[in-house]
Every structure is written in C-alpha cells, then in structure tokens.
Image (cartoon, protein in one colour):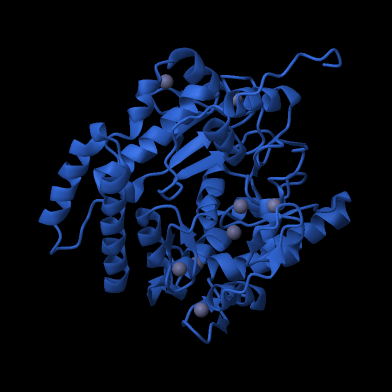
Length: 404
Ligand SMILES: [Zn+2]
Ligand SMILES: [Zn+2]
Ligand SMILES: [Zn+2]
Ligand SMILES: [Zn+2]
Ligand SMILES: [Zn+2]
Ligand SMILES: [Zn+2]
Ligand SMILES: [Zn+2]
Ligand SMILES: [Zn+2]
C-alpha cells in the first residue's frame, strides 16, 4: 500500500510541473493554491489531488455538454436514473435525457461535480444518439466526438489527464458496454464492469483496473482472507466474495431458479434448464450470472466468468513482476508490457501496437472514414465537414459543386 501512495505522490508532483509550464495566467492562482496545499501535506500522504486536475476535467466535460446532446447521470437507484443538476428521477434514461436537455440549458452547471474529490470522480455520460450541436454530425463513439470537437471546432481540451468518463448508450433491452461485446441485464452491473476499461488505478494483486481510487479501495476488500460465515446457513468461506456468491446463488436469489411456467422451484440453475427443456420445450438461449447479472451466450462462458471475475482465480504468475492472471492469454498480453514488443502494425496509418486487441480497437478509427484531407492526416465521414475543415484549417476556398 505504501508503494502505491508513493507512486501517487510522484504523479501529483508531475502534474503540478506540467501545470506551471502550460496553464494560462487566469488559472495560475488556482495552481499556486493547490501547490501550497500540496506542500502542507507533503510530509503526510496527500489525500487530495491538486485542484487544477479537477478544473481540467470540468473544462473537458463542459466542452462535451455545451456542444452535444450528451447528458450526465448522477446515479442509478431508487426508482431509476437521477438528474445531475436537480433531484428529479426517471425510470427511463431517455426521459432523463429529455429532461436534462429541456430544463438544464445553462451548461455552467457542468460544475455539478464541484464538491467531488478526484478519488471518487467519474462521470456517467449518456451518449445515446450522440450528435454535435455545432454541425449536427452524428457519432458512434465519444472518442470520435472529442476528436471532432478538438480538431474540427478547435475546442480547448486537456489530454494530459486520465480519462474519468463512463460513456453509456441506451439502445436496447440489455445494457451493452460501449468498449467491448459484453452486455448486462442491470445498469448497475454495466457501471461496475466499465471500470475494467480504465487503468487509472490497478489492483496489485489481480491486475484489475479502476477509474478512481475509491473503486480500487472497495475492490481490495475482496482479496482479504479469513473466515466469512454465510448469513443464512452454517457454511464458512475464505473470502467475502465467495461468501456473497454463495449467499446469492443459494439463498437470496433462489427466485431465479423458479420455473416461470409452472412455478416449480429447483435446487440449481442446471436442473431448471433441464426442466424447461423437457417439460415446456424451451431451450435457454443465454446464461445469466446470478452474482452480477451479466449475460453470456452459453454456460461455459458463464463458468469462466464466475471463476475469473467473482472467485478471482489467478493460476498464472508473471515471472518478472509477481502479477497473477486467470489465463495464459492474460499473462501473454501482460508480458508485452515487459518486452515492449510492438508487433502489430496498422496497415492504414503505420502505427505500431503492442497487442492485437489494441490494434483492433485502433482500427475502429479508420472505419467509415473515407475522406482524407490532402494536406494533413485528418479524415472525415462527410464531404462538407472536409470542406469546412479545408476552409478553417488550410484557408482553402472550396466551390460548391453541382454534384453535391
Ligand atoms: Zn434536472
Ligand atoms: Zn461538429
Ligand atoms: Zn466492456
Ligand atoms: Zn484485485
Ligand atoms: Zn448459506
Ligand atoms: Zn458475474
Ligand atoms: Zn509482469
Ligand atoms: Zn491506423
């Protein structure tokens, strides 16, 4: 834990150096303030990240809210989704979006995270049907839109801070992750999953990533071993996670093992599946994890998930740094960070990547973008955005052609 905090301290110093060098004068007083705050706590462990970092985050989220139809979600719970700017709750995310866009037009309210500490800071952002307010262009990913804001509309953007935004889309019954093919039956579980795609804070024991420090701290409790007794029966488990998994599957979520057609109950999921198939002729198309409501295409995938994500099994040790991994592929992916081998090259822009997965993710940048600016590396989806770009960036006069 000490090593972790020392790393944190070093990072804070670096951020201040960067700020002193780059921030405009107007923000300078803030910088000095946080610098002093930092000095005061320097001998102790710094509990707060410099205020300037949160100012950068606030600037970034304000640019998004000001120039798009993206809307933040304060939290999910109670009857549903709560507005970031007032106490209104909605059962449907689309209603919250409409409310936010209709009622809260004053984007200075992007200061909604004003009392938030960096250690708990994350913005859940609804990007369903993401659209630029300036030019009405539509975007599939938040990343694309941010690039668009920065390079086409020349908006100020801080990219020297770690990402703290969870983009979410509500476009089907299930909750799909925008970064990977996983889907969930509960919004809460999608949010818990999204941490995996952020490596701002990393668990030293199981290599799981988290968006902020609070989430990592909450997670490390899972690794504590001891005697954890089931609240419903005499069974005892070695970790909190194993205990909770048992409680959910054997006691609190037994409803899930009830047949919806004849109300017969079953000891486990497998028996219910057999019953459904033999008595009612229904084949289970998907398998749902009873601990986290994640949906899988088959039982095998579900079993891997339970072992890897809930029981935190880690059978493969890294010979170089003591990190542990569930699978050999996980270990192999990790080994790349040691060897710095960058074997995967993008055929389109010749960038190198260390992992096939990262290259594949990068390739999405090239999809659909067929219009290449002849004078710089920027690409565009629509003809007129390229034209507008040529005009603003390269001062070119483009005639309206009759084929448009
Ligand atoms: Zn509101
Ligand atoms: Zn635009
Ligand atoms: Zn994902
Ligand atoms: Zn862990
Ligand atoms: Zn029990
Ligand atoms: Zn699960
Ligand atoms: Zn290693
Ligand atoms: Zn490329």
